[in-house]
Length: 350
Figure: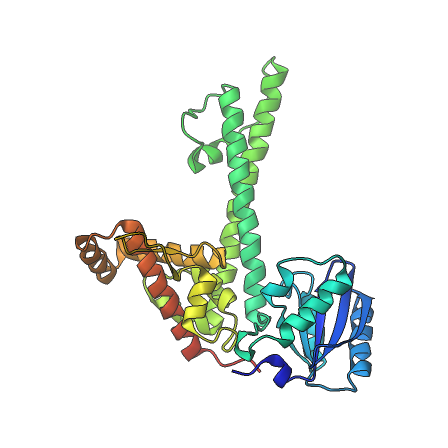
């Protein structure tokens, strides 16, 4: 298998930050030709691309290796793509240990990319519907965290002040709705008055977040139905949130070139954990944990509601497998199935 240096005359390593990006141009033989810092403004990124063109003689085969194409480098990745250059995510080996300066880091990214096998390059994730779903999923996660926090605060408040609600268990949504209809009134105890008012505010916050989450789910469902991943909705266990996360992580055909790599991305590829006479495997604890959670949710649902999966679980239990080990097998199967389905239904990104 050939390396990047065999196909690209220049590689531009970019160390990305909030205010400035540092660009380092490396020739195919590994020499650093130039290094410079540019601001992250639209004009700054435009000047950086022009500067690269000047130092590479306008070679459009020059490859940009950008650190953080989902964070600080996202806008730069879009500008570079619109300019006609190919761009990839910086290799993990070049970003795992930072150097003593941004200039050194940018040079490390460029040189590490030159030595990469072509099939190891990681394309940035696509925008369009995928980008919209990524925004909605991130927003949903924040809503869920805020809702849980507000409910926990409400439970703690109700346990500290006896306001007539049974809170031996955490407050239920039925109790939240009741509290939200209260009216703050003077009880003669100023602490109780403010406790009631705070309880009302927290309950109304929980209900508003619940409403926002419902709207968010409807928007996600509408977008999933518009994309190629919508075919998965027809299968048991695949809800709109899980399918959206699978599509966001997969992004587009060609980004991940094998189902084994997709399984590794999801953290569901088996890792040998044998000892002595015991032969077993455990899951990879790394990877995209949101994708892993989506596959976990699907597996749990299918274990309860899908007859074929229930039969599989029963058979594996007879073989001596634990439920945890069975879920691991199911998640690996689900990753394979999702990858193959999306590769068959989605056109390659051009």
